Length: 220
Image (tube, rainbow, N blue to C red; front, side):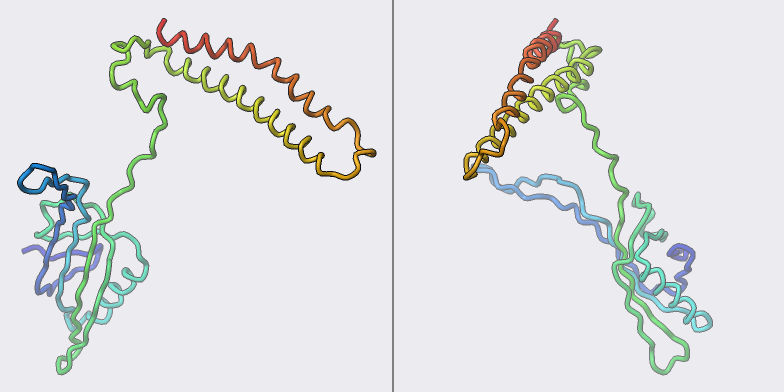
């Protein structure tokens, strides 16, 4: 039996090791189905529990190493025969417990609980239409080679139109707020900002034309 290793710490006098794997199925009841449907939603982390003793000559130093690792909270590596079939790269130390046994000089025992610490998935990639490019857009009448650029044009045009509309709404709110003032004598033309924003809407027509043309490219 190979000596279990926790990073560079040899656990020479391990008395027992237990490994647990929870498949973490979600149980679903289906009307008319005898039994319960088990839906796999991703298993829980592998967990390893072990107990043993540190050898008297190095027990104090070994316990210090273990306590330091646990206090740091960093990921650790663990190897043992019982985990040979598990594809686990890193663990975290969930907990440790140490005991000093009376009557045995320098004898220290310990219990350790390790839990798998999987790597984070790759960052999500935002793709047009949720990544429809992987599902044969040519069969849907779209030309995948131009889809990205067309969607970019649509997004830009739609954004510009919404920006212009937001500007008009802000101006309307400002004029409405002036209505609650008691004296407008010293205020210039309060409607001027609104008129200016409405004039900006003259630029929306070409944007709408561009938006329509871009959408048309999707099926051309």
